[in-house]
Length: 226
Image (tube, rainbow, N blue to C red; front, side):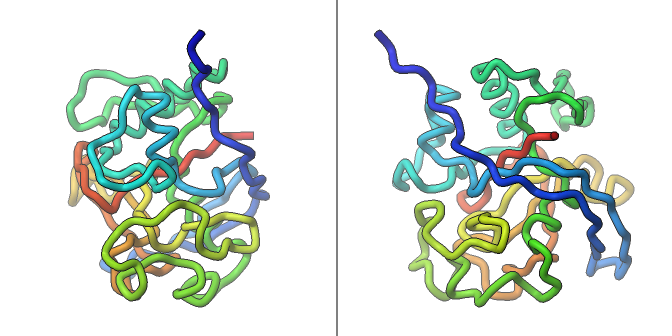
């Protein structure tokens, strides 16, 4: 008898609210409404990714570290397969565009998905307004304390809403296209990684890359709509 595929543990309930977002490159601000949602307390681990997908990308890192080397499109496919495994309605409709521009998110579906950029920063801040939600060495694995490697999830202090690793350890893919007029299909990622200096480990820091991009300090976190 085979063991059932493990499912994510309890998710944090994030209340509805508003968030002021800022792009430092264009020096523009905008306000976004955030509906109540559920968000995983840490990034998807190598252990969970392998259980759902059959294998995780090759890495010397342990099973409880965030999965890395996954593209935005990989993350979307994982979300759909995990939803199906859990008996939930998948959130994404996928086409065959190699840039992922034909992927549609059904926000009212009950399955797993990536957070939007607004949801991510709102949850990261957890009601705070500073550069980050705590002292960097206490909340994050980054260049100054990581030893040059990724670390197990949940081993730094959480924010006020019980979320670990929102800053540091790995960057996290979000749903949003970054700036289609300038960067085409590039998607947003947030949060800073294990090799990032302090400047990259801020609640407002935005990065982007092609949805097929894979690197060893970029993973993702699960969200669900309520």
